[in-house]
Image (tube, rainbow, N blue to C red):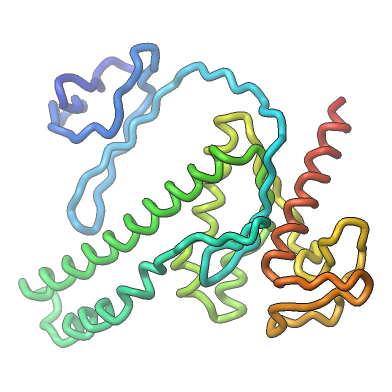
Length: 262
């Protein structure tokens, strides 16, 4: 690209605009080549510049030693194969009553009046705060997992269809599972690690996760949160059992792919 876009002395130099003072979030190595800049404006009037650089990065495939399975949970975001779950604060749900009150106030104002615009901006600020809190949590959670594990298994879920068919739109949007998976994938891949997707029809919850036992509890319903395997007698927490099965299936898929490439 042309040299008409530069970063210099805490300013972003743009064509036709000139030097714009900016808050730079990270240092840029000298060998990075600036390719493009995308400037966007939020509903609260803030401007962000997304700067694309080109650089060489040699990714060495990691040896798979530490593995984790994640079972999607509407309330906790996920339950993992170690029986742990994140302390997710459900930011949208916590702010919902305040949002509803502010929206009611807005509805009683004269449309496009000065007070109407001020109230609309207050609502936009609160929405932006919720989105930033959620994104910050998901970044930290995905980074922690990507640094600790070499292979992570997740289910291939259609979140849009789930939110529409089950009427759980607000809950699904609140935990942003799709965004979490995207963040987790690139954080793993940049370290040569793996995010493996398991087919959504795989019976993760119904299959007994005990090694050597292949029993599938076909009558398992959503209301049943714990069950005992009639074949081996193992007692299962539904979500932890599903996460273990997702982990094991992800490892199988990964090993099968490696064998095909050999």
